[in-house]
Image (cartoon, helix red, strand yellow):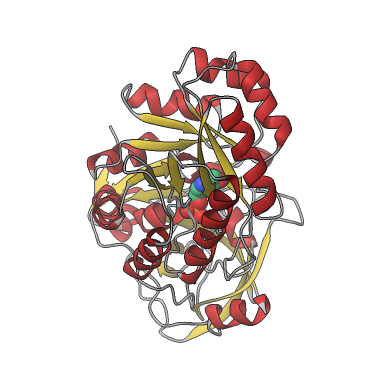
Length: 397
Ligand SMILES: *Cc1c(COP(=O)(O)O)cnc(C)c1O
């Protein structure tokens, strides 16, 4: 049975954990799921890769999520093990022939993303040109104000997309269009711009879409990130959809990951040593904190010291993870109490997204413990860095 505590401080007081501990907030996960389900004009698919923990999937299901963006057979199997009736969609643009066959024959998957003619060919071959397949054409979007840009790896141009739509139609397959504006996208207009590309692509191909999928990318609150409210994104999406002619039964989907689950967990780590302005932690880049390596991802942190009060004065610190590898460091700077020391714990907030998912056992370290906490999510308060949105906007010009 997973233990429940009032908050991270109560967990630390009780357990004095030597290992990193995930503190999940199922109530917050359920609330975020509901916020998406209530405000999105279509079906909300949870992007499983963001945090595949069963506890997370269950809390989201509780909030009304019934469909899942799955990118591999194991992800499909994990979701179906919890909920056999869950809707699963194969949203990886590059799949092995074996996995397409297994997904089609054994798991009943009917929606597959493609962004290249060879993948469409593969899909036809491996499903025996079945007429019930829906080909989801993935468009590349303009480089926008997102922290992560997926455009360089996946997605095709409007022209290539139109050719793929036409080819699918020629094979008697239904087709849809999807995109991903990039993760932690801070500009609602990115969705509007992407939906303009969708319209151009559909017009060029003269195809009626079975699905329009606006992907993930919805931001969460990081330190200094200035994320617009979810409603602004939904408004931009509604506007973009208004400009697209589509049949009445056309499905509208989104695939949030980060924006739905980041606030649903904190991570509690311990300081094992301090060397001047650097702290050696028991978790790091090869564990839960891989995502902090990328620019613009700056999670809120606070010291937990049972029976003591850390100093109110803050100082900048760099962080080292536990492995003996030089890549395992986070220069920050992270603002923490000036007297932070060995034996202190640090609660890292907004740690529900891309944390458990990217853990390794490198050097024998593994953040495998989890509890439930009942307090409100630990969000950033005062910005401690120059406005991230402004920096990204400048960089995008
Ligand atoms: C990663 C991913 C998502 C989720 O992205 P977030 O930025 O976490 O919302 C959605 N769709 C696809 C295809 C993805 O690869």
